[in-house]
Image 1 (cartoon, rainbow, N blue to C red):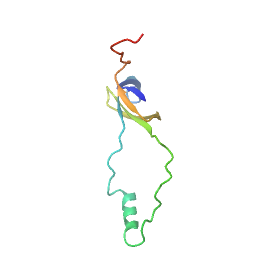
Image 2 (image 1 turned 135 degrees about the horizontal axis):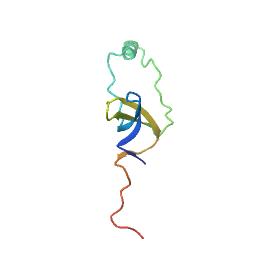
Image 3 (image 1 turned 180 degrees about the vertical axis):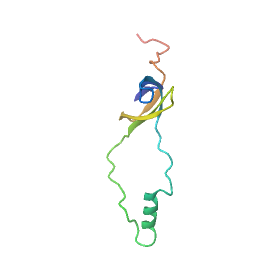
Length: 104
């Protein structure tokens, strides 16, 4: 499990200095139905003949690389960075939370 801070100091290419960045997990947007590849695929699929392009079945990876979206607090410029693979990812506040009852 990866715990990552919600704010992080990182280099901003527009401010040309290290600034605090707000961290959010990147999500892929909705696919455009009029994109050239989609139009080409739909045209090829039309009519008789079944599936025309290969459908991938040999999935080997169990995790995906986590992509983070960092937004500069000053100029609002956004940059994307990838971190390592993990099954569970969590954006948490700075510092570890201490348990209420100590176990000694």
